[in-house]
Image 1 (tube, helix red, strand yellow):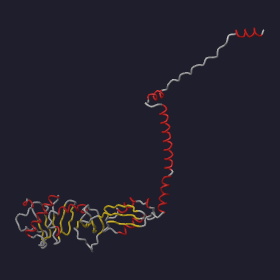
Image 2 (tube, helix red, strand yellow; image 1 turned 135 degrees about the vertical axis):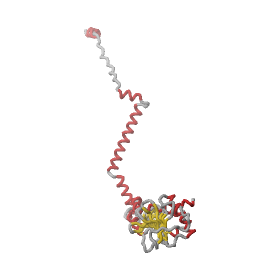
Image 3 (cartoon, one colour; image 1 turned 90 degrees about the vertical axis):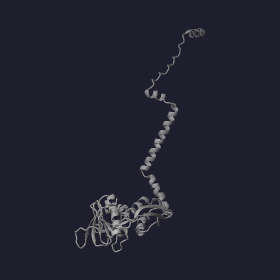
Image 4 (cartoon, helix red, strand yellow; image 1 turned 120 degrees about the vertical axis):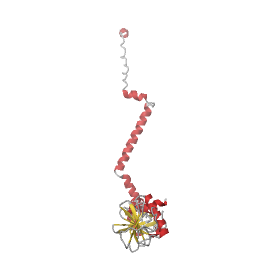
Length: 304
């Protein structure tokens, strides 16, 4: 009986296990297609992205520290430590000084005395020095452990500028160096009038055309921003024409005539050469009168 039941059980149809379905294929997105076109594998791209993320995070941290002033604080702490070790400004060495007041230079440099050497403001010290009239250029440097070195280039005075009842030394570029004591006038030419300081180099070039007259000149007055009047030690005033070439030509002619006829020291008040065709002179005994110089041909044109 049991065997029959077993056989009948064996005859029942066996039901098969449900078949597994294949996973649905994901449709590739536009981004995936674009990534597949890159000449780099996805793994390499993933690593690159990780590195980029790490760099960005690190940069953010560094930026945050900078914003909080941490590097500056560390720098100040280091500088203070160096200063505590004796590296502070205690001495000033001034090089190539001749005219500028050394006490003024020293005072400017020693304003940095309380600072450690790494924190000394070299540019600021130089800027203060450049405000001094005598200084054309300056270089400030550190010499450890405790010395500031100030190397100076001084201006060279070439003339005295008289303007608004004041006297001032000027260099070749017309830069005012400093006031002049009229009780101790230096042996330099005097230029007079507004803007005359900026014409000092032009005057020097003009006088180079007549070297025999140069030691006889007391001053030169710049007139109406156009031309020069030359004043001689003997009192005469030579009125030159406008224009560099015309003025040089007239001055050379006057020098030739002075050597030949001795025009200076003869009581003339002025010699007017503004008209290139003639020379007009005034004498002190008859102000405003015209006299003819000793020769018939005195026009600058006649010497060409």
